[in-house]
Amino acid sequence: MGPRGLPLLVATLAGCLFPARGCVICDPKVREALNSLEMDYLPGHLEANHHKKVMEKIKQAVEEFKDLPIDEDSYMGVVDEATLEKASWSLLKDMKRITDSDAKAFCPNKCGLMLQPLIWCSTCQKEVHACRKSKNCGEREVKVHQMEDMILDCELNWHKISQGLTDYSFYRVWKNNSETLVSKGKEPILSKTMVRPKDAGTYRCELGSIQFSPATIIYFHVTVLPKRIQEEIPSPNTETQNETALGEVALDRPETTVEPQAPKPEQVLRRRLFAVLIWGLVVLTACVLTA
Image (cartoon, rainbow, N blue to C red; front, side, top):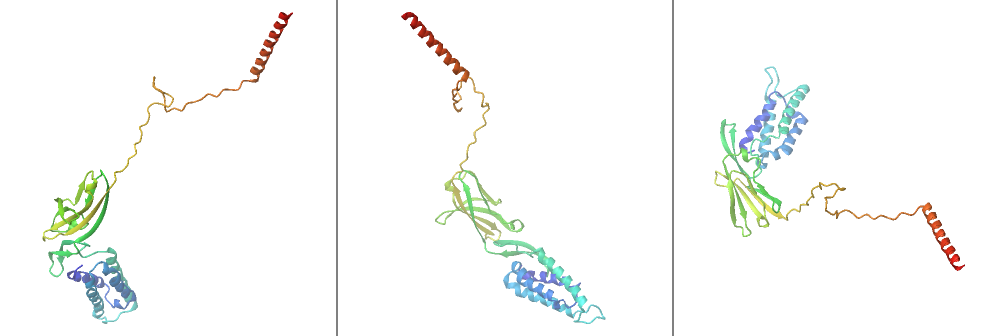
């Protein structure tokens, strides 16, 4: 908000006082609200060198209402407690509506040169106001893996409502501070597919304006990381584990060994009896031959 926007703020606050009338400056809550307006609200909505002037005008507008009579039969400069409370509540409600809206008269840009059309309250004419801030809008770190896409976005949120902007220009900045123009056009994005280590480095984006000076300047520091390692997932086997194609050997199947089973007691007894009969037959045969 510049000095030419002061009448707008003062008129807005003064308009809140018309239904209030009376000596609202006597209410401690009003004085507290004015102090909060000066200490908390204005620092984020107005340049510091204009704070004092704005507060002087606002307090003067509030205090001057004590000299206005409500009607022909009323006294000037006095008020009863009930009317004061009602008037203060009306003023505080309207002030809170202003502060809660977080409205800014103009110059929403935090950096760069913004050309914004405004209607001046003194003449009711529309003119272009130059909101001049530092052209350097900072530096950004960009990390991208090798063989992937690099995207550098140079657009700020107020670019679309600013007038007199021309083209976005992207430059490659070399170590000796020389620059090479990479691209130029209306698009605020620079993209490069399948980046390689040689693409790492510093890039500068410049948004031009009709005033022959850049509106914004942004630096990008690009780091190219090693290629991502992608693990291959084997395709599912169409054959069942229990089936193998004819003539093929299931190499990946574990070999199974058959453990011998212990003989049953009946089989052991039968073998022993058979052995006794054989030996008895042998002995009998020997005795016969000897006789």
